[in-house]
Image (cartoon, protein in one colour):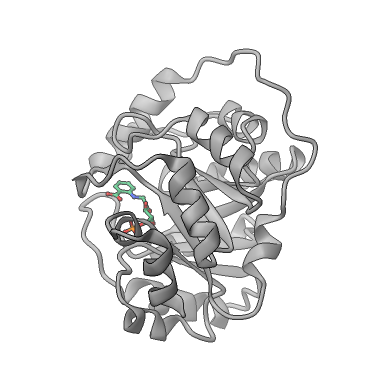
Length: 255
Ligand SMILES: O=C(O)c1ccccc1NCC(=O)[C@H](O)[C@H](O)COP(=O)(O)O
């Protein structure tokens, strides 16, 4: 079952509609028998970092044409607990090949970072070595629970992404065990670092006891302070990818 994408505004809608046109099921390679748990990795003490391999983006244009394996190995050495690999090709320069190559090179759990708009994309994620997928409530709406169930059924963790109070409500109603709060408005691309702590507090007040991840816009250590004691993890891409030394940059950011 596919979401109605005609109602999704801005660049997010453009990316998702293009992605939906491209999904044509094909025979997948055999999935790895076991992959490390994304959820358990983020539940280790302290604020876990999910470091992102991101070559370009709508907000930045070209970021850096760094080999995803070299970037991931640097992230692993720098203390990342998980790695997010963009697999969207047109706006982010990613691919499933990148995901597979990173899977073969590092021991950390991998998040397939894409715009999931068809259940086949979940099967692809599993086949190419992901431990988890991103489910964006602004795209999936009322179908979020259906995609969440399907992800679980095939052995994937799901990070359910929200940006507004209404989306947070939908994520919690859908039974999300991991909620990602994006500071970036995916329609305007504006970043507001108060979004994650504000919605994070609302989630905890509503009794959410699962994994909370703050996403987007972080580049300095002091910006992580409001996340302490509230969030389990932070997802960081652009600022790390732009750093001359990714390993050092990660250490400097989280200590
Ligand atoms: O990054 C973008 O410009 C973007 C545009 C449209 C949809 C999604 C987009 N980014 C996805 C993300 O959420 C980020 O890649 C991720 O949270 C890391 O953010 P950052 O550290 O700011 O690169």
